[in-house]
Image (tube, rainbow, N blue to C red):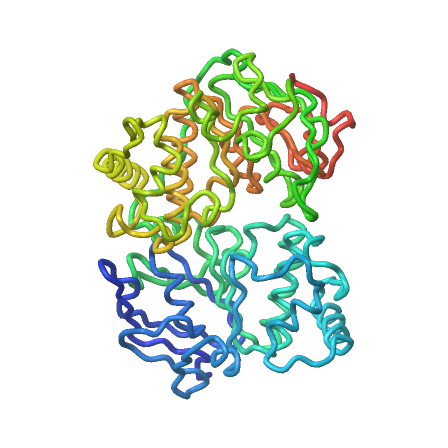
Length: 507
């Protein structure tokens, strides 16, 4: 029988208050596309960081090609043939592709030689990329290609991919999967982490499932339904979000010819966005990454001021108001970037609760913070949204990405906003938690809150939206009823066909 490429045996890693991995054992064979599944906080990140040399296990062993494997740092893992593409890209916007790739090399050759290598690998694996392009001008999918090509130039035997399709279009996902299948056919093993279970079923031939740090089973995704895999991950039946019937309410937020310059060199200008949002509705806004989502959220949150009359709330101009005054009147936002934007990494969850909830939850009195009340609010968010953490005094950076996402979204929902703007609400969140967040958004709308959900997950938008609009190059299409929209119609809207018959207005 073929020897495993990587054999894990009894890996255990504990942190104060939590056991991240407990007696984890499984094998990855050469050329195998192996999925690592588990809900947020199941221990996936700790495990792959152990394999990549970022975390040292407390006990257990790893064998790579039959020899002991104990990488003290990522450099040692890479030298042994293990490469990793992280969920968050580590690229410099102002540098070109070749320069970024050189930064990841121990002894980089001249730029001309690197450019030639990039072109060769691009052609070989179907990853079109110009080595002279400035990274800040690339789409999210092209940025991911930079990371992948940087790994492929190391000739890896094992490629770890963490949520690789979270920012990709369906077309870019197809390109990525063709590349991964080609690598697999050539003998490179792939350890693939994703919460998109249909993608797991389409790509992977084996899956190991973690729950609370332990291996609870394995399966062949090709013959296992997405629902069965999700229930194996969470250990219980999967909840399906339910809509409550609700009548259309009065207009609460209006955008009229909203235009704004790009905030920085690589940003996207907003162009003549006009739309009304009603109480009790969920307005879904789709779009490929980099088409103005962040800028739209900044304009709505008050981080980016706008001219008078472009944004009105209950008929009053609010374009001059900053984030805190908007929160006070009931307009709350949850941005896409949870670490550093929605939450301060080194602050505790209590402190992060204070950052946005002080006014609406009355956490201060005469300039003095009521820390007992703030702690109670943070604990309420943790309980209501099943945030896996030892306690509210833990720093935000100590949480897994999905658990921090649950905290950030829950913190805003539990302030009872009149308008809630969320960008990528279930990014990096497991199937069970994603269903819970979507249900919470629907419940909020049922109470009369106007919800604007900006997402690249079209299935998510179709599941919860009353109306759907597409953002393309800073322009917003006319909204249409979400029910009955076809994939072809959505594709045209995403592509910028705003003036075509397909985008008729249901204003």
